[in-house]
Image 1 (cartoon, one colour):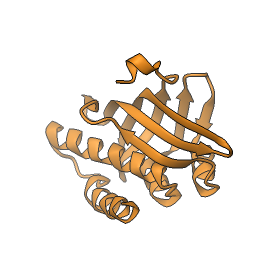
Image 2: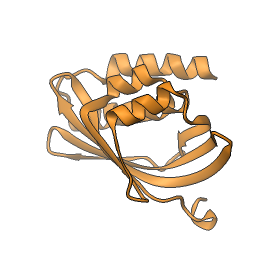
Image 3: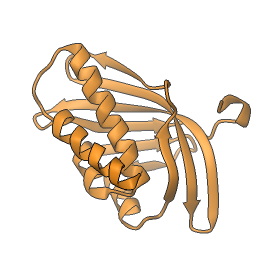
Image 4: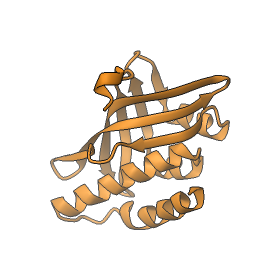
Length: 155
């Protein structure tokens, strides 16, 4: 499974990080694939792939109000702070919206299951990821994640 994830990441990155202008439908598919590849990279702590996708000025704000930088996330992946069994978008929940030519927002429900140190977690949350088109292609610039959903809302 991990090998398959890595291979699909490589294929998605070769196709989807290109800076070439495309039509709106192509851009939406490209950004959707990049976001899915990003989640897969996080799941296997692939800091190199994450670094290719994350914008240099990336910021993540989580539901509790904590703010993380690009370097915070890359350090966490390198240190394997989280060991994931699941870090995947729930099927059918991903939506990509374009705003102008160079901004896209992905929303989806995310399933996170794994351990951090001695503490296990299994939760779902909603996120919004903002992508911007740069000279090097689409990059993930800003993310916002909800608090963990209550069990009845996670299904």
